[in-house]
Image (cartoon, rainbow, N blue to C red):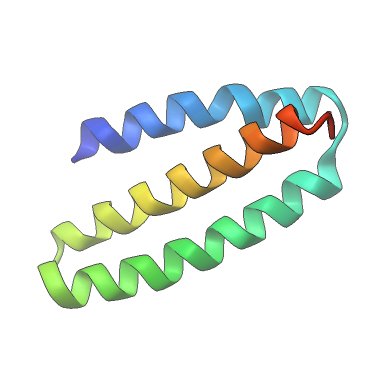
Length: 79
């Protein structure tokens, strides 16, 4: 599971760094807030179901969410 979290972080980093380079700080903050909400809800739920391993699944859900939102923002020309 750690490998998946790391892979999602690597893929997400390209898009989030591009948004930073384009000075899209407000958009990145909004996307991060959405992803943080997903992370909190997912982690709480997954820990209740799977125990400590659920925390990694919650982190993965947050990284995947932020990655998808950042790449979509880049595709829509926000950066």
